[in-house]
Image (cartoon, rainbow, N blue to C red; front, side):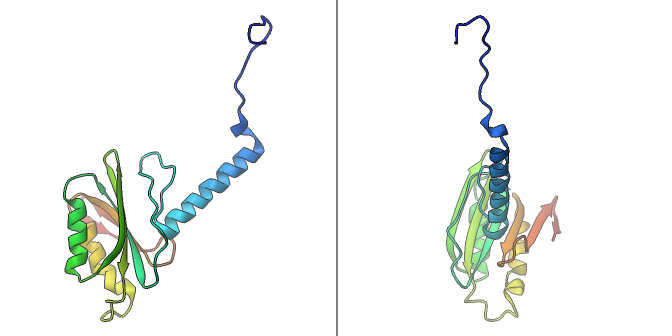
Length: 157
């Protein structure tokens, strides 16, 4: 058939079937849910793929978006150390100029705070305002909660 004069060969567009479109929509929804609930990123065009195992009990998950530059991760860890908070697991990856870090922080040392929200409010602001950090998010178990952004030197919550 390939060499036949009256034949035009076209690739099969299986991704255009109704079933494939439903599957792609479902997959996209699952990935957005995973990002909101756990900070995981998969199949992104401009962010690195990253997935940290589930949070242990008595931990809070932080995510930090920053520029890929020397020393930023060290400064982030320093803020937690100065606050007396222990990082129990951490992963950082880069893609092009973007760095994405996911950290789980032990909350058992937050006995002085009225709630986890108060315990991490100042820590989040200090991290977000570090030079090179674009935004941060604290995941308290509620999807989308705790987002903060560094807008040209101004702190936005």
